[in-house]
Image 1 (cartoon, rainbow, N blue to C red):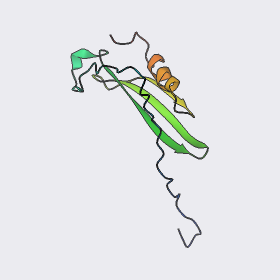
Image 2: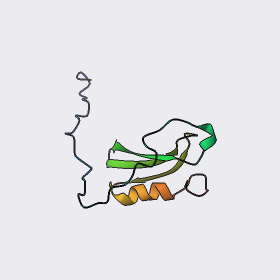
Image 3: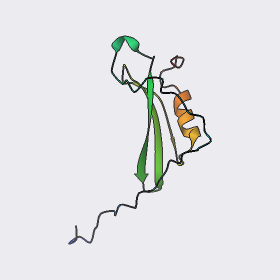
Length: 102
């Protein structure tokens, strides 16, 4: 690469993206940290995650919601910001239709 005049992209310093609101109400852990797979329990427990994707135009945030039993994606959303409405959009936009679990 040096001979061709190219160089790799230098990683940027880590940036804190999550801030805790001390006034926010505590939410109970409804699945009790039990992520075992039960094939008969499709659409009873969903799990979400956020992935950061570095693009030429800046960060892209991808929020996904998956069904723990089937491992299928039941909802997703992307945005150029990391706000609560991104997660809300992923949990309310259905990939296959149907009501939310519970």
